[in-house]
Image (cartoon, rainbow, N blue to C red; front, side):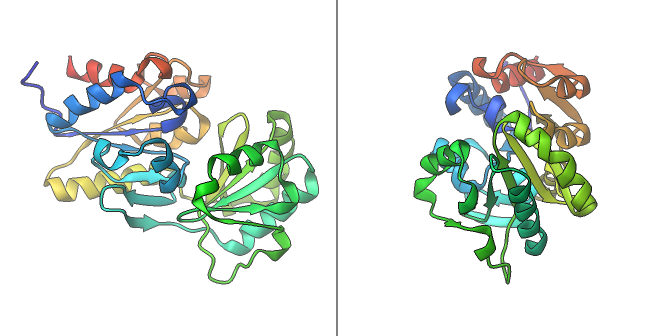
Length: 280
């Protein structure tokens, strides 16, 4: 269908469990469909909890695959992967960040913590569990700091997201206390059973979607139809804010309930499936 016209479409896709196949595999069906989508005017970007450096680790040519600004750190950091420049950021109050990590340290000896900065992570040395060790092994080339939380310096700190890492039951046990203690200071969500994530209140993938949609409309000279794709709780605000919402077969039930388009399993190329559906 050479007459396809995607020029008014903007796809924002989650990465893990959505764009990626298993083990962060790049799925050829997705890449082929994205090439077709872009060749016919379409725009696509990731919307992820990852920071830019972590995207580049698994997608070396991300600056050529994606042609719209990336929503990273669950909306706290909007980044042009091609130009390698930050377009907008929403840091948290570092005093509250440190207090939240200290609280969780007091609640559990099984839950680790890391904080997303622009290019790296700050890790609580007091709680390096197996999950954090895996993170460090995967991200050793990113730099960052490993320090006891008491030594974290808040003056001038630019921190965008807290990730508490552990087993599902341990994260579920601390979550009510964290939310009750900090209330509307943070946004709270999970991006998998072993990731409990916090950003500044009002900062979600939905705010990222709105920023990117406005940014692209200004440059294109016309509005865009936003299509959000995701699989987990942290995707819900974006899915609810988008013009069209889609999810892979493996999405959690709460996500499936708000999506008008249900796609194939992420390991089978659900972004390719999406593009084929809107093409027809």
